[in-house]
Image 1 (spheres, one colour):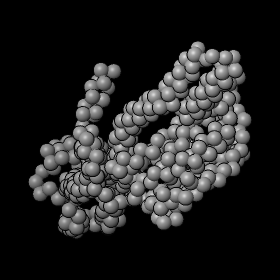
Image 2: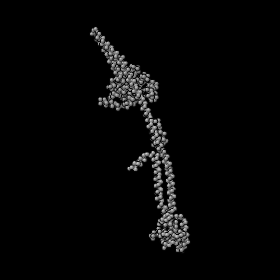
Image 3: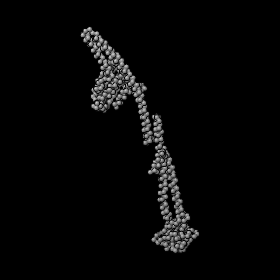
Length: 483
C-alpha cells in the first residue's frame, strides 16, 4: 500500500502533458522489447531447423555419390566431393567420412581431426541420422551423422557452424531494434504534438480561471479551432464568463437602483409627511379651530333657538372635519385593500386622479376573490406609480386600466396615449436616468414571481402588461385561512 500511495502522489504531481508522454513512450518501449524478445524466441528454432536441413541435404548428396568411389577406393574423388560441398556452403565448418570401423577415409581439416570428435556423434541403428551439438572454441557446432548405404560403407559427418546463424539473428534483431527506435521517435514526436493539442486548451483555461478569480471578467480564452471536447469546453467557459460578467453588471445595476429607491423612499416619506402636515394644518386644524369658536358661540347664545342654530353649525363643521380625515386616510391607504377589494380601491383612486389631473380614465376591473393584502397592495401601488408616470412624463390625455383573471393568473394592463419612448434605449438606462418608477414596478412584480412587459412607441403611447401567477392567489387564501 505504501508503494501504491507513493506512486499515486508522484502521478498527481505530474502535468497532463508529461503523463501522456510517459504513457505513450512506456507503451512503445514495452511493445518494442516484447517484439524483439518474441522474435528472438521464435526465429532461433527456425534458423536451427534450417541449418540442420542444409546439413542433412549436403550429407545426403555426399552419401548418394560416395559409394561408387568407396568401392573403387578412389580417395581423391571422395575428397573432391566433400571439398566442393564444403565450399558451396559457408555454414559448413568441416566434413569427413569414416568407414564402418570409424576410421577416417577423407576429411577437410587438412591436419589431424580434433580429439574426441569422431566419438562425439554416432548413429543408432534405428535412426536414419543423428544430430549432436558440440561446444567448441568457435561456438556451437551441429554435428550431423548420416550413414552411407545403411552404414555398411561408413558414415558422412558434417559440422554446421552456428556462427553465421548468430550473425543473421543479430542482424535481424538490430534491424528490428532500429525499426523500433524509428517508430519510438515517430511516436514521441506524435505524442509531443498530441500532448500539446490536448494540454494547451486546459493550460489556457487555468490561466483564464486565475484571471477571472482575480476579477478580470473581460478575459476570454482564445478560441480552440477544433470541434472536440476541448473546443466545446473553451466555448462553454467563454459563455460562462460572459454570463457572469452580465450578471455582475445586472447586480451592480440593481444595487445602484436599490440605493436610488431607498433615497426615493426617504424622499417620498418626507414628502408625505409634509403633505400630511399641510393637510392637518390647512384642513383639520382650521376645522378644529372653527369647532372651538362655534362651541364658544354656543356659550354666548341668548336663546334656545340660537343655541340650536349654532350647534347645527358646529355639527356641519364636525362632519366636514370627519370627511377630511376620512379622505386623508383613504389617500394614505384605502381601507378596502385590507378587505381585498382591489377593484374598488383602484376605482376610487382613478376618479380622484381624473379630478386632480383632468385625464380621462377608462376601466374594466374584475373583482378577484381571495387576494392577499400583499398582492392587492402591490397591484394598487403599481397602478398608482404608472398613473403618476403617465401624468408627469407621458402627457397623456386618456388612460385605460384593465384588471382581469385569465385562467388562474391575474392580468393587469395599463395603456395611455402619451408621448411614449424607445423601450430599447430607455429601459437599460433606468439607473443613469433615475427612472425608479418602472424599476419599482418591476421589483413589485418580481416579488410575486410575476412577469412585466413594457411596450411603447414614441408619439403613440405606452402599454404596461403585468401578470401575477395563480399560485399567489392560493398562497393568499391559505394565509387568510390560517389567520
